[in-house]
Image 1 (cartoon, one colour):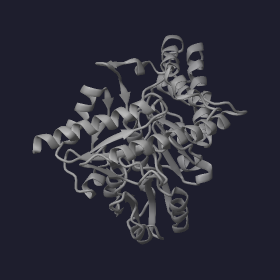
Image 2 (cartoon, helix red, strand yellow):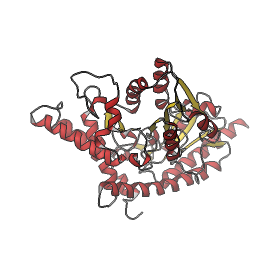
Image 3 (tube, helix red, strand yellow):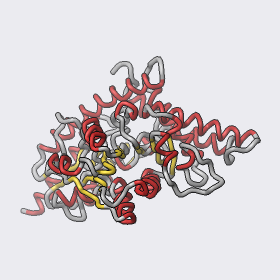
Image 4 (cartoon, one colour):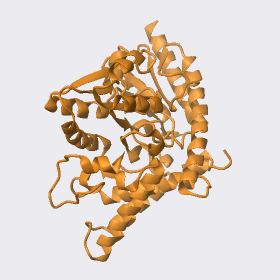
Length: 414
């Protein structure tokens, strides 16, 4: 832990953490929906806009500088994901990127094959494949979720077999914090002759991704979940990008990775993405950027698990609270989902915010099949996620706030 900056040192880098809500400093537990950004990220974006703003591939200084910033950002993302820079694609967001890829990829599949999706996933890794399959007359097989927030193993065996053209699976559940056994799933798909698309949006902030070691074909993530700006990133095998029959403008570059990048991108967001990776690496010491990232992620994982365990034990002790997803001793992210008997999730969230300065999210988080499987209505779940800037005091404040809301609810019902 000594090798990585302490939580209070890290917090100093985030201007948002100075926000006051009444007597409290705001406690941001909404990281699974989007983290706060350090000043270094916004500085990089402003610097680009003020000093380098231009379109690409022209022979004047700001255009050449923009080209260089994009190239360097690809390299940083490639290091972050352990991928080939020529397979790193930028986009507006992961959902847009996945729809774009799905439209191109399904053209490779025939009507005798099927696409495998899961009920544990965010809809951004379901709807693009369902729509693409419908256009091609391809079947979609859904792997169900078990009540404890895991993938149904029988369904996996039934569906991920020869004849499957693609397995679309999340590395981790953004609703419940479940982390899937990706190496085994990718191996199953490979043995079946299937491609694999991994949604790493929720896992990327918590576990250092290794695209090459994992061996999947495509992997997407969102920088705004790991302290960067709103953008989408795809890592892919470059030869697969080159083979895609992708919708594109004929004058645009036709080689990987740019042939998947439709239109003019947010260059400032690309600069900010690189800065977010540099920020994470800079929290630790190491000989290389990847070494620094590994040290940072190992330390943050340990901190996150300690905070999660405290939050789980504290909430579990409150009458009326029901916790969902794997317990703290399972392989998971520090994201916890719960409900409170008799109190709508939206009311829990608004009360925590107004009274205690605790910002949590509520609903289904676009993982609608998760809340349906759990038998929850429109109010869905309350979700609290720990980030690099989360403190023990904030966890204690969250637990205390839920306890008081629960006590008031019980008193009213008597």
